[in-house]
Length: 119
Image (cartoon, rainbow, N blue to C red; front, side):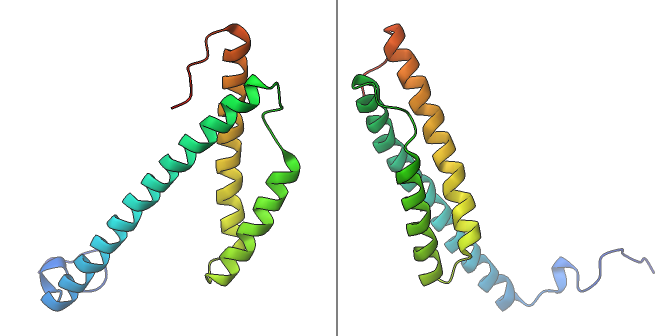
């Protein structure tokens, strides 16, 4: 008899109905992940346009007042959706940092005359 370091039933011992439900849930998760990626891509297209507009008019890449409003707004949305507001804030803060990085690059490219036009 062989022993295993993993507790519980092996992969062949799982009820087929449980496997089917797990696959269904994972398919749903995969679809949501795809939607999140597409929504982020759309968001970044819009923020790229903002970056070009700011660069053309010599506005700063960051807007701390707007960022604070957006974080407060997202925390409220998260609470209403039963999502941890701290997680939502961390997520938005990460996105904002990436947007600012893009805006800084666009501003630098505009000053150097190498900026591509917005899509």
